[in-house]
Image 1 (cartoon, one colour):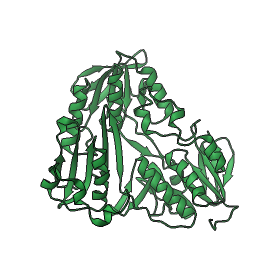
Image 2: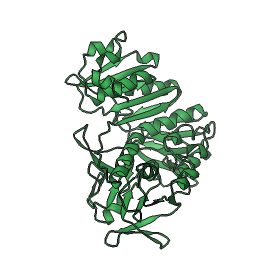
Image 3: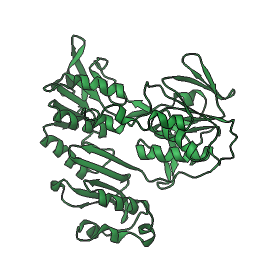
Image 4: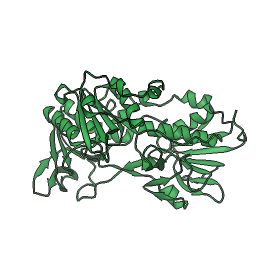
Length: 419
């Protein structure tokens, strides 16, 4: 059992994936104090990744997105304040202030405040049919616009934009993706993978336009009717969805005079510049031992690992965060799984033929595997996670030769370690 006093109160601000995991992990690790979980949405904590996929497509309902049923929180004696908006943190009094005037004292405070979609600062972007995709309410609004035959402009060729485009074109919409960079997925993958996904979308009927500058939106009757590019091109549309990145919600931390930068700055145990306040998830900027530098990561696996680290810290069991980043994206019949960060590489090696819609891209730096993207190759991805974690040195020809099993590249130690 934990030696933390049973009268201690831990308050968690943010009822997303990270906040929910902190709350229940505290109990799993023996925490006997009071746990209060506060969220500003009128829902129990839910999974966000399906929002741009199964939920948008109408293949999943809101209940199926719940991370845990209400009974789990009740059994764990987690007090839920949902919906409630936290407007301030008073560090001197060790309390938080809610929008409705209530206050809640804490002994330990966890900020799991997540982020919000980056807005598009262009003329006409304030129209009601210019939407973003982050919450259940956002997707409900998008679904109301997703009528067969409607024209959709997606601004941003990242994960969210392409996932949305894949669902929309299957639902019968006429979809255009506008990306200002020279290629889609430019921040997260190599040109070879970008070219593959652009081709897949175009073959599905999506008009993918890269290297374009969006200048303004024209409106009719208060709604956007066309997106206008810098070269004068007008793209008629019925709805626009903007997916150009996330802004971490650091305002509570900044106003409480905590250290912030690109996110809330924390140490390897999740502690902010105030040892009684921790931060976790999309809003947290944490040292990454594998990378050897700080990183703010937007992914479910990262949120879960950070949450368990923070729960351990709160229970007096210091365990430094050491996870290797990994992600996934579902588009059409393609499951893209990515491990490591495709930055600073000097060679890309393809294993398999992209035309088969099943292959991997290995990123090497001085002969060491630093990242892998796997398309419809779940088995090889599990091996790839270990190769990346150990920065295994591998011959490019051996990687590319599908007759050579990837397992042969693993060290005896990694082969004995479960993933």
